Length: 409
Image (cartoon, rainbow, N blue to C red; front, side):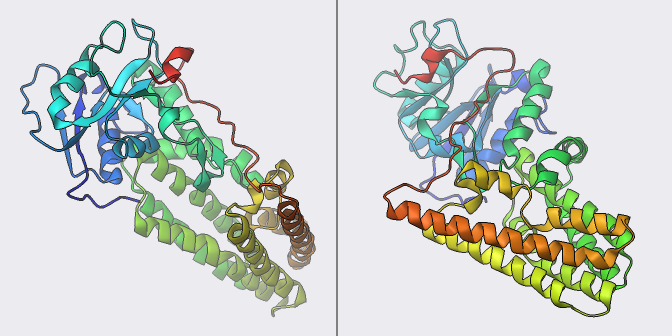
């Protein structure tokens, strides 16, 4: 969510953007991505200058100066803005073997020094800008991303035309949730990447995709209620696909917005129980016991997840490997749609809701047991935290990272 620029926010200065002008990553040049990241982070003023162009250095205040031919993790940008007096090295080997200077947050009085350091680092990497700590991305921001339920090493990558396709794959993978259902995890990634690439190149805003998801969700509800289960399932599966597309498009193009978040999350929460009620009406002409079990189980499941989060500041699906594994099949929308699809393909849509009801009861039982076990573990003095916090680092394609560059000087 974008931050509001304030008078206390540092200025931002982008240099060396000319070498990456022909490179695009998910439809954006590295400088465009950097501009968006800086605006999201709340920078009050953003200036861009190229090598050889005249420029007027800022006279006062704090300045974040960054290379325009590098691809920055937005988390790194936010952390650098919050760390004045810091020099950032990317773990790519340079002539000195100490990492490549990519950014600095300095007082305006040291702007010329910082700009020269980025343009031509000294031989030993330390004689310029003395007295300022040198850090790598992992030193200033944690790897774990709560919103994506996974650990991902913060990155700064070199933007080059020959590596653009591989970088796109890495960034798409970094934008994907680690803990999710089996359809989203294994069936949707390849087609989602293809659709996101087309939409990104055409500058389609994620909110357009989210609105299409809303329309498909409403269409599925009406079709289910009328007993048109085949067409309803087509609309429902299309909606679940677009529900994956909009989030990935927003992340890889840095176009998340408050209204988009509200539209997306409210749709995720609201539509499943209405689909189940509509299915019950379409199949039996009334809301029968099985349908009420499914709807009640959906609400109970959300309640259990909320209690776990409130008690342990952690999603229940992230606690242990078994919880992550069970999330792939637990009685949520996509696994339930699989059961409903099987029922329709078997020619017995009226059996769909009883099948989902049985699986809902089994899933709620599992989550109740896990919540009880978590409270018992904490009572024994154990820390309840995510099991998967070891990140898989993003690194320069085809180049092994320099281990010395990961150490602050």
